Every structure is written in structure tokens, then in C-alpha cells.
Image (cartoon, rainbow, N blue to C red; front, side):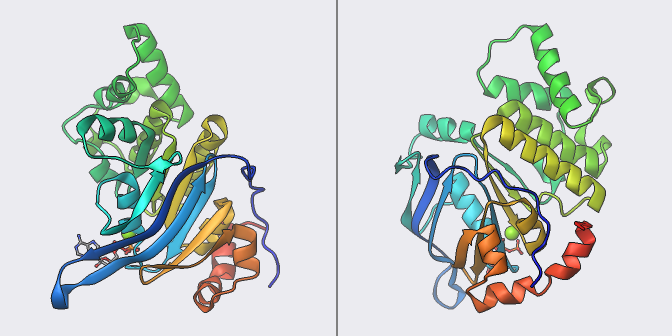
Length: 278
Ligand SMILES: Nc1ncnc2c1ncn2[C@@H]1O[C@H](COP(=O)(O)OP(=O)(O)OP(=O)(O)O)[C@@H](O)[C@H]1O
Ligand SMILES: [Mg+2]
């Protein structure tokens, strides 16, 4: 297969530290006949500043893994380590600390915002979450800066409610929040599925810029192997709750070892055209 043009990844050095890892993560839903093993002994390790994509068909366990990483769902067995030590989320203080470092963007931007809060409050809350003591002027400066970063005009939007924004504006607002929150780990579950191809690449570019500036680790969750190849340093391929293959994106795409990966890659030329990657 002819190699595709892709963005040159800023591969994190092997010395950069593992931010989050999981050993034999298993998640079982339900009992008896209803029992589903959504994850079956999944291992992973994501480094600081690394961009990882988790690719797999619908129902393969991607969102379940994301929720476990975020601490929204408890694993049935296995261990998550954060910064080299077992993650503890037993008490409120531990959860608060952990959730300061981790943010997610979900498929549907409508569900990401409290619809009763105006844009100004949604952004202001991010500054408060960071525990920064800023003057009112400084708060405005930071919020404006975040909006400018995502090509939104704070003056036009601050007084609006999320339901008064377009889908694309909402997506941008989500990224403005990430800009303010500066998480260590960003999990983006199909963040671009609701927008057209043009805003899609803008959104990705914004996220990649944030990674470069903040050394944020980004985990993209997607069905789209072309997109994953385009943006990632590392790929994890999931099938039926298992990671069937993982490694540097170039290696996984150009020399796939698992039949399921090969099957996914058969769609790439089509996606390649759609991405207009030359
Ligand atoms: N709360 C739940 N209760 C019972 N089963 C669940 C629950 N959440 C997920 N599952 C099951 O676990 C499996 C994995 O689901 P998951 O949402 O992780 O898949 P996914 O890879 O994110 O799929 P998609 O690409 O469609 O978003 C599916 O079989 C799903 O039905
Ligand atoms: Mg999902």
C-alpha cells in the first residue's frame, strides 16, 4: 500500500513519562444471560504529550474504556495507574484532584453543557475550577483569549445560552473550556462527528496546538482509521472488548499485524480522499 501523507507527529521521547496506564482492565455489565464483557483484560500506557487514537467498530468497548479512564465507571478488575501510582478515587478530595487533570469531549456537544448557564458562566466556572485568584479584568482577559483561540467572539456570545449556539460554535466552546482548564489528559470521544469536514480539521488543529503548548496527552476515540492515522502518534485497535493491536501509528497502518486491523485499513483510501491529504 502506498504510504499516505500525514502530519509529522511530535513523537514524545521515550523518556517522557507515562501519564496513565491500565493493566488487565476488565469490565463486565449485567449478569447471567445479560452478561456483556465490554472490556476483556485491556492493557494500555499513554505518555505525557502523546496523541493516541483508539479505533474500533461500534460496541468494541471504546467509550467504556474512556469512562473507566475518567473514573466515571469502575472497572470490574484490573488496575489503573496515574503518574506511576495506583489511582485512588475513594474520597471526594482524591476525585476532585483527579478530575482537575482530566477532561473529556463527548460525541454530542449538547450534552456537555448545562443548558441553563450562559456562556460567560460556563467559561468562568473553568477559571474557578482551576482555583486561580483573578481580578474581574483578568477573568475577562482569559475568557476572551480562550474565545479568540477557537475563533469565537466573546462579546457576541457571553450572554447566550448553549441552545442558542450552532453545533460548530458549541464544539468550539468546548475547546475554549479545554484551553482554560489545561487538563493533563483529554479524552475526545468522536469529537468531530457532528461537524462538517472543514470545521473538523479546524477543531483537530486547535486540539493539536493545545497539545503542543501544554504537553497534554490526547486520546481520540473514533471509528475512523484515516483520522486516527492523520493525527496520532500511537494507535490502539479494539475489537470486541480487546486490544488486538497497538503501536506507532505508521507501523500499525503500514504493517498491520492483525486481520481486523487489515480489514479496517481497507477503508483508508476512501477516507484519504475525503481528507484531501494529497
Ligand atoms: N451501562 C451499560 N450497561 C450494559 N451494557 C453496556 C453499558 N455500557 C456499554 N455496554 C455494552 O458494552 C459494550 C461496549 O460498549 P461501548 O459503549 O464501550 O462501545 P463503543 O466502542 O464506544 O461503541 P460506539 O462506537 O458505538 O460508541 C456494548 O456491547 C454495550 O452494549
Ligand atoms: Mg462509544
